[in-house]
Length: 328
Image 1 (cartoon, rainbow, N blue to C red):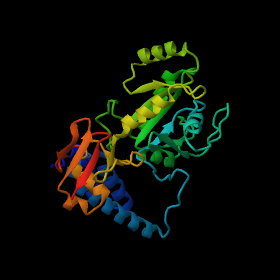
Image 2 (image 1 turned 90 degrees about the vertical axis):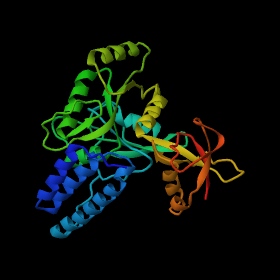
Image 3 (image 1 turned 60 degrees about the horizontal axis):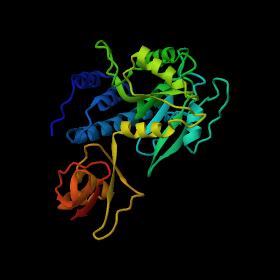
């Protein structure tokens, strides 16, 4: 499968060749990795880039003599998707994380309560998503490590306050993100950027929809703002639309849940294999066991696009919720 690399990739590759220091080489390689299309045709190239990144990071650390000190923003990813919740002060970021995860961030009625990011795991049916509460996103100053956390995230949630000029809040948040070269798929990306942008799946969430009449206010916001990003209204006080919020995260995560079963037995629906959308039976076999990639002959599948127990081949494109019986 061809890699189909975009022009921005080759521009970053040229910067890599011209880079004089290990740090600059790492930056260019990470840009190449970030803008590379995600499909099977780029797997080997991605592996090579990661190996080079590791090599030049080692060189940079040896040059400094000491390794970089970790910060509170160096949060290891857990679960199928890391979601960073950002937004201005007092919009309810901590309340949302506390409501649906096992984390206990400090919640108060005054702004700037959160001083460091706080991760938690949110249960969604039989999987969990990592949600990270963050300090307020303001135009005054944002720590570089905060921007790095946003760049690494799989999904961004911009949380706004329905009662406090959400249109201005959204404009300010997008302006700050764009200053970090972070854009959503729905944004118009300038053509004169010096560095390729990081494209992030982004969800706008309007909090404090505490009363039935607040729906009308939300509708006015949607009409006047002309927002192109996916957007929902929630209430962390009443729990309104919290499950819809988790549904949206699942949609944006770009993953599927696939179940395996031994012959003559039922599938274990509590422990799915998590694979990217568009994955094939061969991709799944590699996640089950390395040896299965070469030994797999075919499988029987149960799902929405096949007859129960239908025989499928290695190139069968899996569908969310499929049950497969691997035959080797």
